[in-house]
Image (tube, rainbow, N blue to C red; front, side):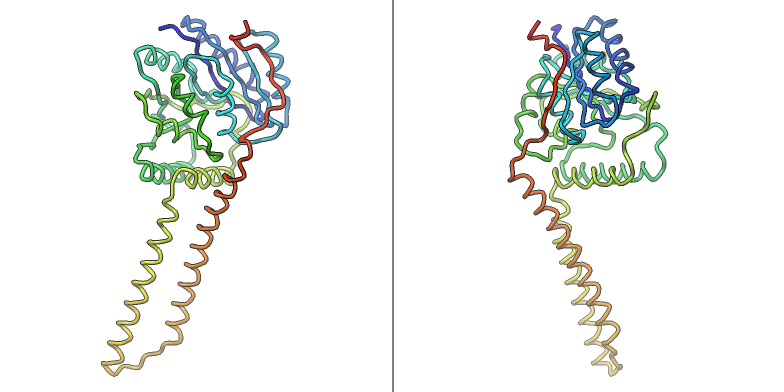
Length: 312
């Protein structure tokens, strides 16, 4: 089976990487004899990213571009690219080339063997600092426990059969978490290992704040574990309250003086703080529900460039 491979490349402020990415991915697939198209999705960049995409599309018939009206986030960019893809299979790769393009060939060969979801799993995380590694490990442990899918080394780097792509694109939820949903959909799945490379040019667009927001939003969109935490917290506080009451009763029976002022104040502070935390978690989920029921589009496309293979 020799089918067209659509490669989706989400791009945000990546003016220095557009031509490099087009050349790197295109040359690898050309050398392997794989028919392909490259779909760059400009996620509301503030630099010359879109101009570079247009120039690449004008010079190379395998390059296409999609431009958002503003920044909608990487998940939206990936899904928009998949929605535009004409291929029999679709790969997703980062524009910074930290995902090795030659692994797409390995994924494609596995697809030819009948696999429908080929996951790229990180065998190393590059030069990330210790705090980032710990945060990533904690986040993926929570997601793995919630989804019953091992996501310890998961990434957005993967190749999907057209059937899996169509399922993902049709999903109605606004807060989609592509990295987890691509595993959740099932199908015949395998994986390839890769080492994260150093960025060739430009700077990472992920700050600590944005990474925390990304983790919290995706955990909430894919799991109700934080809501279950509220229940566990309530049971724990009830247990503390009962133990406090029993200890106070025993001391009273034994004739010891029971000073309730300090202990009661601490207990009230504990309960109050826990209630505020619980309300915050519930309020966050209510906000997510509110965003879903508004049914706003995941993204807004203002411009496209290049020709689809279906038009040729």
